Length: 395
Image 1 (spheres, rainbow, N blue to C red):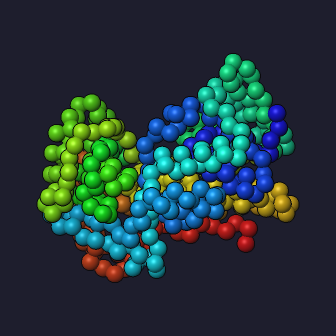
Image 2: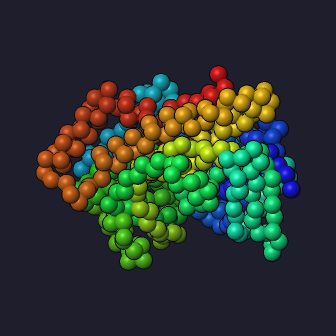
Image 3: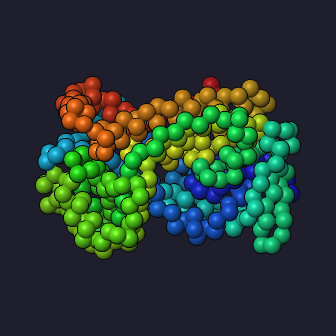
């Protein structure tokens, strides 16, 4: 079997890349080692930057997003017992974010791919990428008991930090920059109305808390917890009590509690792999970089990579612009490092660290107060939160 681009991974980045390539008239096959049901069951990010929303519309999958996505023009930050609002739109020259769950993005992309008959292999085992640094890379895997080989021009590794794509690059050819945080986010999904019409980030001496949502009837809450904490040790009552203790009283009065539909712990870390390409293999999204979710950047960074790669490949196939291949890594990394810095800053500003002394706590409290009280501080937060425009690599 032959295709132009073999895409490893059927998460939102792999599916979005396949959809954009289809609209550019470029053939692509998607290989995923999990089932489609498993991919759809993953509950993750839900805050989309304007650039990501525009890219989904460009891919032809924005109709349901336009109907059901929740446009947010601001966020709220709780500092001890006071709630402060950051007007994102005012401080970012009219931009905003949209709350629309990653599961819904994935579903829209899956349905679109099925509608036009795109080829996807789910439940593929023993996936291997061969000769990515040659002019003739290929991918092999086992599907429904048969060995399959796909010859291709390029391989897009959209299979996450632990997938086969990054492991297919010799370790000595990569530089990995990592930072591990001493805590994670204990998250609860509940079928309850959101506590507020905007997201609430809360700083408290007991630890960070976040009140988010997936819809007007489905809420997502997080609290800071040790990274080795067992979610099974947390009853619903214990979670709601810990959350309430970290929120301003005005927010607690609006909190509706209920049985948890899902409870999990996500350890926090930052990681960037350079370069993001090796020969004809490109790393996309989590395969190249991980950020803590504090800045709501993970899915948006992946969309940025996809946007660049789709334009690189379109320019190559339709205009013969070979020089664009060298532009992928530097173009993506410029945006990646800006988001990594912002996510690191937000995480340090709002979380409690075990090793903090009194001086550090006072400095952080003063920095947060400056950010909230200053036009410059609010502008910097808003501009970073709504995200930078997607890069035009073909200009």
